Image (tube, rainbow, N blue to C red; front, side):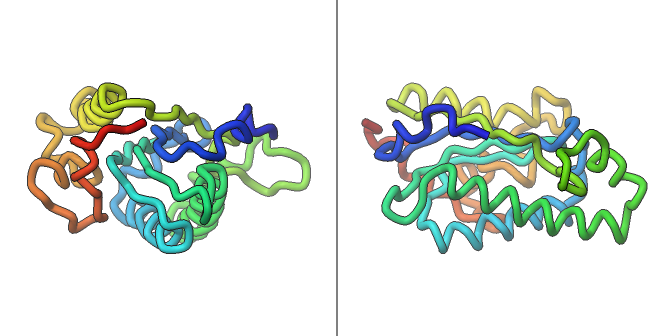
Amino acid sequence: MGLRNRNNLTAEQFYFVTTTVRKHANVFVNSDYCDILINNIKYYQKKYEFIILGYVIMPSHFHWIVKTEPKTGTISDIMRDIKKYTAWDVLEKLEKEKPEMLQVFRKEVKPGQKRQFWIHRFDDQVIRNNKMFWTKLKYIHNNPVKAGLVERSIDYKYSSARNYMKQDHSVIFVDTTWGGVEIL
């Protein structure tokens, strides 16, 4: 699948990214599956040296704002590896614990492919300035509230709202200092 002009963005560093589970399956309602995604993010964070500026893991998708280091990995490299290895780990766990759910990932898969966890593409937008950063961060933090998962964003475990409002980095470290830095 094409890169949708991502080759033109090799010098860009700040992105708002969304990726979705196939058929919007609610896999990330269980903390074990959220932890698989978090652990893969942490692993590739070391490899690609990116900085997380905001995130939320919703039942069927996740959003994040990330600052990449183009010399060590593009947004495409990062998302390819996180999606690939998270899919393997989640599908392996589903096979053991919830084999009936695997049907969602087996139907209508490309020839030669046994199953597909994520939709093929991910959506990304270059963060061009502070206003856009804060708009996307507020959107991320409000997502669990809007979905009716919690009443207050700070109460949602898998969201950087906790990092920003409580300085709680127990799930994953989020660099909360970038909010006041001019993004060019």
